[in-house]
Amino acid sequence: MAENNSKPTPEEEIKEICKLIVKSQDPDLVYDFFGCLFTKSEMSDFSKRWSLVKELRAGTTQREIAKKYNISLCNITRGSRELKKEDSAFHKMLALLDKGE
Image 1 (cartoon, helix red, strand yellow):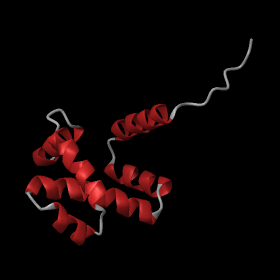
Image 2 (image 1 turned 90 degrees about the horizontal axis):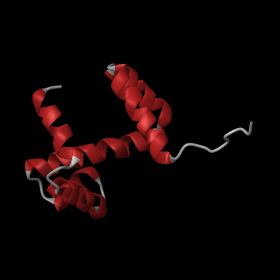
Image 3 (image 1 turned 180 degrees about the horizontal axis):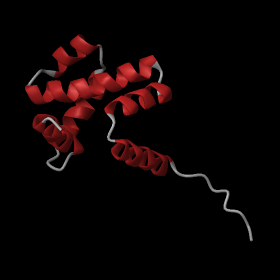
């Protein structure tokens, strides 16, 4: 029988990570896991992207966000476009944040 040497797709790998994060139910473990996966710079960028979403929802202008977090307007515009979608995962995650979950 031939071995299946195909590697998982990036989407499959990310979904696997997402399932593990949900399964862990441990924010400290997830934080430590992110620290293993990402450099300090990548963690900072990751954090800034979430901050910009919250800032946009609060009504902060894109230019103010760019200056405050040193983020490109392209990244902010991308977040803004996503927030305009009714079924955006951003809305669902922000709702969870509002609930304190």
